[in-house]
Image 1 (cartoon, rainbow, N blue to C red):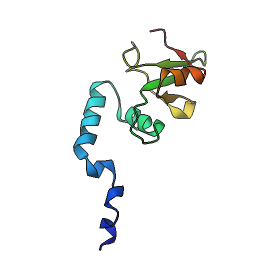
Image 2 (cartoon, rainbow, N blue to C red):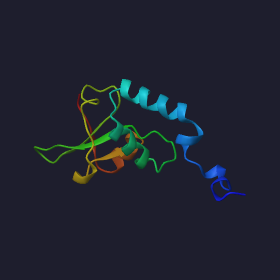
Image 3 (cartoon, helix red, strand yellow):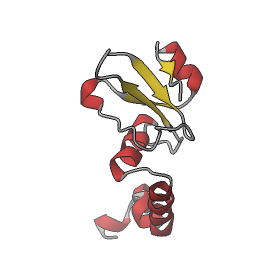
Length: 105
């Protein structure tokens, strides 16, 4: 047996279900997500497929930690930069417990 075919069950989702990946990218783009947003969300979920869609943003002016949920006014414009301490959350409770407050708009 050739080495490349021995562990088929370990192949990436990209190779097992390319339509699923393409559909997810198209769906994300329609919702205002960029590719980097989706990759960061995937990383935040540990690659488990859980959707961590709450954006934890740090205010440039005050250093305030604010989270945005899908549907809020500035959700689509908010970009997450992990190098500045910004992060993704999987639930509002998780964001509150980490000391972040919900966006007012």
